[in-house]
Length: 56
Ligand SMILES: [Zn+2]
Image 1 (spheres, protein in one colour):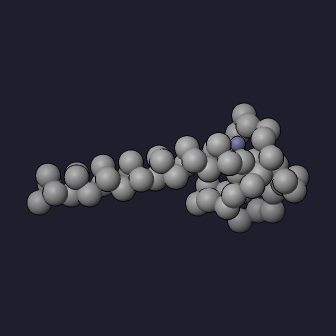
Image 2 (tube, helix red, strand yellow):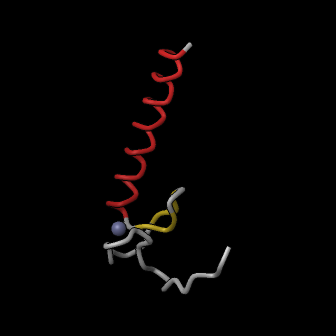
């Protein structure tokens, strides 16, 4: 992995220049992005589980 010049305290989400407040699997992001990412992960997990049940 390369070292990215990340400004401290800046949201990692592209197109967002909010203040980073929370660590997520996507990086260090602002509170609203963290909520969106958390929601997206929950949805993905649910879809994943549903897909597996359908396939088996
Ligand atoms: Zn953000």
